[in-house]
Image (cartoon, rainbow, N blue to C red; front, side, top):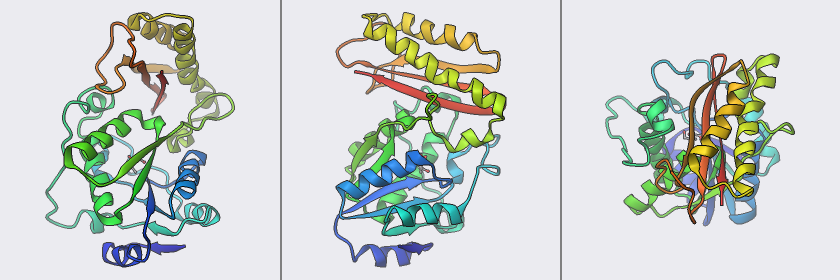
Length: 277
Ligand code: PAF
């Protein structure tokens, strides 16, 4: 496994491979990331993983400084998975002095995470586009956990004709349902227990849907009522939206729906979602 921190050296190394899968990450890897690596390994001749805590996708009052990092552990995990190339640049390599070009994906960035975290998707789209240009992957692997991110990246690829195929992989969960996230490490034991309310709320609404409920407001209310019963949970949003446009639905139609929510447990902001087919 080659560990590379400059764009020039990465381009040289990349030239030795044909088909290449990219798993973009911000490090502090968990089983969710590793499931993306395994899928990429199974589908591509070679696999590259990027580790870069992207400053432009964090708002001024967000957790950039305290975002968990453990490069040695990450590299050991990736080595064990048989990853070929790791791209782990410093911030100045990606954003040198004078950097001033950003990608603004319209429409699908306006709601949900985009409304709650102004500028977040501008940072995500910009860094993902740069990673695509540097790594030149055949396919790029993203987790369903960040559902809106997958919609935004797919739209950017379509709108800019980027020659990359996006592969979205299922959310990996703890046995009690909590979606894996590097931010789960912020939770105290009591908060960790309370955090199961996200997946419980989604499951309750999903069950209503499977029983035939198609009124989107009823599905949102089903999630709200579970969340209201958890004293440590502060709800930011609850959504039942069209899976392509992300507009809130009145009725779930043939395209199904994306149920999603953002909840604060203490100071930690968690998101989760489930796709209704
Ligand atoms: O999902 C993430 O970890 C990040 O948003 C990504 C795609 C690596 C871009 O920084």
